[in-house]
Image (cartoon, rainbow, N blue to C red; front, top):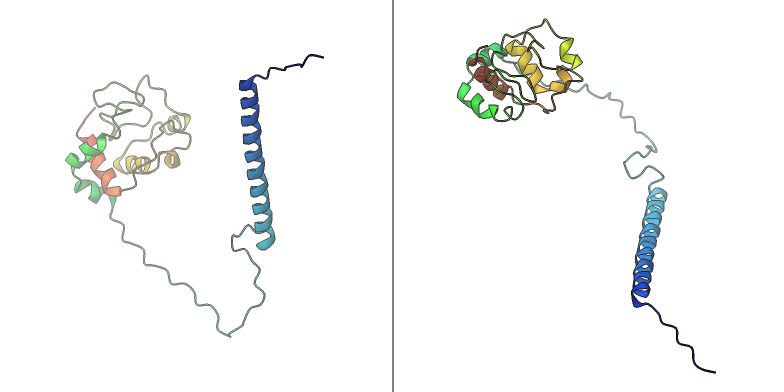
Length: 186
């Protein structure tokens, strides 16, 4: 009887070996993570280690907890005063954040043009498709105070607005930007 030789394709063997090795590694990792989770839940009583342990006992000292003293509220400077002291040149630098979507030449970009925005009625640029949140505010005016509130948190001021900007936290920066925009009349 003649010997039978079976030809084995080396690429199939290598691919199969690699697949088995990766599967073994993934399986071992899964077992490791499962046992880690199980040990954590047993050790911390199912609370996930977030400090939610029940207190075993309480010692009454006879003294009631003193009410927390309230921190004195900071004197808020009226926005009109901040606006009067604002620097339009600083606002011009802040404008760079806005010019990706807005223009000051009377043409619309992704957002409506902002020349003449200070004192203009909300949602009043003809031909621009405003969000329903701003359309509902039509008839109201963009006062410096309204603009400041909108710039601080656009989605909080007009929920559902199309404006994707996250907001400008510094009230001084908002005042400077509005002072700059006020230099561009309608």
